Image 1 (cartoon, rainbow, N blue to C red):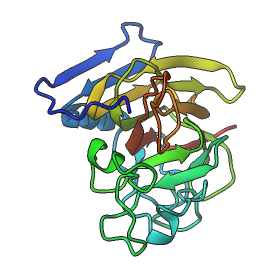
Image 2: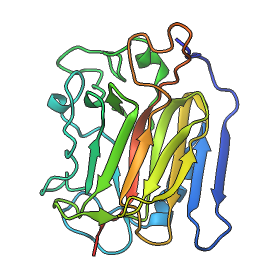
Image 3: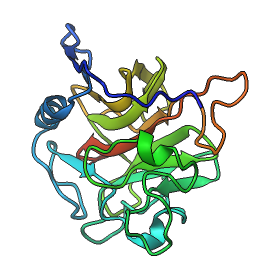
Length: 253
């Protein structure tokens, strides 16, 4: 494998904002990401929880995966619309799809299937490599390193846009485009890289002035999770994710 299991002695933090008033604000961090995550939340407003319906033009919804029950966790797949159900607390307004085999949330350490946590069911070394921001589950596509996110008025099938999307990565080893944002017509709003934090945590969040983001393409490293990733001559960087934070979904007029 290409992973290097080590103690990170230097923690980096970078928070940047676009100088143009019409451009997005970008928040990034590596290592100790707590203050960057808090800053990103504050840029969006208050936490609007998991109730159905739009809660106004400000605020955010957040997913930390830890409430996902065992039947939707590894070794089982999770449904794409788990967090867009019509009842609280699952009405978050987000749907996820992948061209791969499916979406997976890692298991708890005491799961009834007895699989290793932090995607150790796919590769035992992952249980030691991947760290968590909020205990104890993580999220990743399986069979692909791509997830496409679309937004809806929480708990409905009404398409929506948001002001921004941010997320926590774990074990980013190489530079690569992490997020590309698109408007309702499919036009790119920009692509952004996540900072490197080998065997540690990274954060990337982007906030636009208005709710114009209809979808986000998310890349999980440079290759899919697997029992032999990085074997041979191909240097594959796999990375999974923890918390998702995104602006309050607004119905597309």
